[in-house]
Image (cartoon, rainbow, N blue to C red; front, side):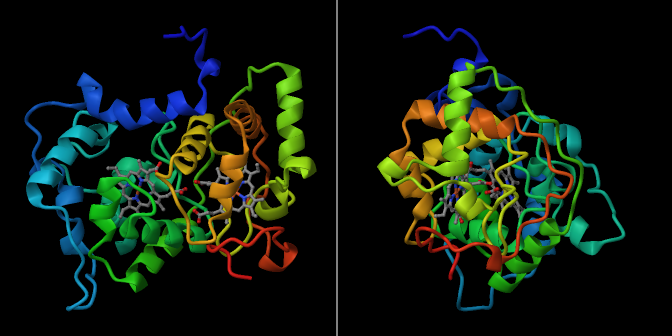
Amino acid sequence: MAARKNKDDHDYKTIFQENRSRKASDPVNTPATASVNQLPCISEFHTMNPARPAGDARLILPMNQLRTLLSALLLGSAVLVLQPAGAQPARAADPMAQRVAACTACHGKEGRATSDGFFPRIAGKPAGYLYNQLINFRDGRRRYPMMTYLVAPLSEEYLKQMAEYFSSLHPPYSAPQPANLPAASLKRAEALVMEGDRSRNIPACIACHGQKLTGVLPSIPSLVALPRDYLNAQFGAWKNGARKAAAPDCMAHIASQLTSEEIGAVSAWLASQPIPQDMSAAPASSVKLPVACGSFPQ
Ligand code: HEC
Ligand code: HEC
């Protein structure tokens, strides 16, 4: 096995594997005595939130699977620090904040993400994008069992409300991450982002994600202010089919065109960009997608 010189030698495959296995294998995160009841925010989630209409029930993970999941994913991690056993979720004046305590247990206060790059920020992303992801987890286009478990029984109307709620929050962003890569790699990455590669039919990222890379309404996300590990993991998931979007899945196609070296460089370059003062997504009318994307009807 090739030794890794430093953290920046991570390629997307390593990151992807590490992210997939870390929560389950890290002894710190897997105490043996896991119990759903120790996490009131998760166990109460479905009683606090409106269900889908009757007759429209979807398969919910059986309780024993949920227990395994909880022990593998949650207990002993930062979640317990945020929501200690027996503690009341923060009684905010906003009832929605209270009902989504389960979400912020993983996604950080107000959905601002956690520092490790594994639990993504959901605050301030376009509501249509967040909603599409909730549907993707529900329908198996993205895979993370706890996400599926939480959203499966909820009505689409309510998923929309949760998406709008998190989209409306704007907690501070964490600082950009320095890109410790040779200048030539970063130059190449910048060219891919800003211009694409005509000879290989790869469109520029800005053609869809907006001139300032802050996303496009209603459903294209920003590419700035995302951690390098998260970016690498998403490309890994697209490449190996663990993440899909509504067809035609333009991102799956783009990911398949890029080499792992290019992905590593693009992720490092993006994660190192200064956070724009104005992170709001550009209006839909500002782009004409070069390739059709099922999640962005035009
Ligand atoms: C057990 C931890 C956990 C809980 C609880 C949780 N999530 Fe997640 N969520 C994740 C992880 C991990 C991912 C990223 C998975 C991946 O890489 O595909 C994710 C991804 C997402 C995404 C996609 C983000 C993006 O930028 O593409 C959204 C939206 C989301 N979660 C919303 C929610 C909401 C709303 C709730 C509460 C109902 C919730 N999550 C509860 C762990 C959790
Ligand atoms: C043809 C339009 C198009 C182009 C070009 C494009 N994207 Fe995307 N991208 C999308 C759409 C649409 C989504 C949302 C997919 C979904 O709903 O899951 C997306 C999502 C993403 C995400 C997921 C973000 C998150 O928060 O999880 C990443 C990362 C990404 N794109 C990176 C890139 C990079 C890097 C490039 C340039 C190399 C690029 N994209 C070029 C349309 C595009």
